[in-house]
Image 1 (cartoon, rainbow over the protein chains, first blue to last red):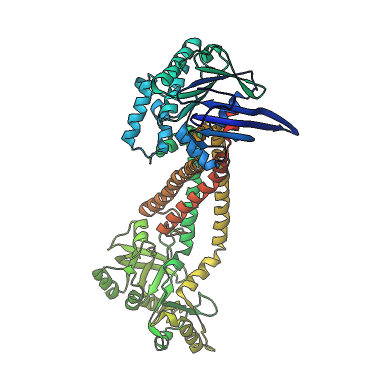
Image 2 (image 1 turned 45 degrees about the horizontal axis):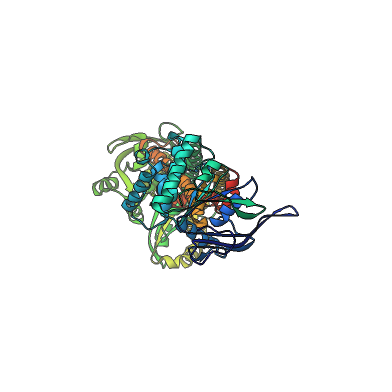
Length: 241
Length: 388
């Protein structure tokens, strides 16, 4: 269940209350998010839309613990992250968040396998256990046969699939996708969206996605528009939910 | 170990740049190595000086000899265990450029005084029995291709004439840093030849005495006793520990330590700038990747460690390479002919200095990587990702 009116119950996986974020440009104070509320249940696929500068990426950064809010609270699976120290937040991120970026952001010097393995280096898994997890993640994204390829040897769509494998390999609590299809042609974009939908439906992954693409947003169970720093639920979201 | 691959692939992603930085490190550390070798060559006498030995020389000047009668008088002084004497011959072999130290010595007492010089028993017996016998150090023998049984002609300068010696032995050093470039022959041969020649310079006057102390702790007292014994005589003495004596020779050449310190300092500072610049560029190029690592959950400390480790690895590879070449050059020179033998007879890289060099290289690596590493670790993920 996705709610933006602050009436969600304690069982929400993600719970945001009164979230505000201010930026300073010289003497000018710019309020990007204004008293934002959000409740997202486990296994939801939520798309955030809105014009450039509306605060979509800012919201995603706050949800991912990459930035801190000016006011308000964010709780994920019962953990209140807004008051965590930088060190704690880093550990929390490693355990709970899977990031998928528009530009894939794979390390060019590592193979697909090694890129996917990166988050597992932070765990206590043995080498063989890490291999099992990486192979499984690459299998899910359909790139088991490309594990020893470097990013430069892959197409854009394949690179994004490797990035998705990297995001899911440590089995995070939720996935944050920032314009995951923004740099892809329609066919590749559809493949990525199919994959995200499948992760949500078959693997019960909670996905929060920022996008400008209406077709991409239509795949989500809920579409939320950011308007003047607050969230508004759109009509007619179909998606997997 | 699981992070090693990340470290290595990052380091060698720009092979030419990394290669050139390692090359700069290697050349700088080679220069450091050569300075160490030169420093050792100058200080070799100081390094190997016996703690229980004194040198007694003429108070006026080192080149002025002392009467042979002093031998017994010194031996009688309390605290003196044994005495020997030596005389600087200063001749040349075949060509004036072929310089090496030649000493006229008293074989038995000399041998007992310097147990660190190893001579096979049969060769030493031959040295004692043959008046024209000589023993050469292994380095000098190697330098001129001498072998036992050869007849060695030496052109005398202080003691003029064409001197002939029978090479009956070759000595080696008990320690790698022992001087094995000396050439010894019997003082009696020198003394009698000079008497017969009618040139009485140095007759019954050896160059200096070497004293072995009963107890090295008594050095100061015994020094005073010896110099007081010969005070107000025709040939007053100046006694020093062997180490101080060797140091006075080094000082005559100039302040080698200071010169080496200045050159070494400049080398390391330049190295710091070169490596620091390389690491700064490397970090700047990888801002987005480092931000991604942080987003994935790698800590600030890990990022600092990663950059520092790359810098240290460059330093370690370059440093080991440079010092390795310096050690190899010293060994090759000593094995196949030292081109600097006339000035620096012993080219040797002390093992403890290898460790000092490697430690210095690592220190440069740490300092060079520290600023870029700190800036990488403080990187704000949001700001870095916005720049992509």
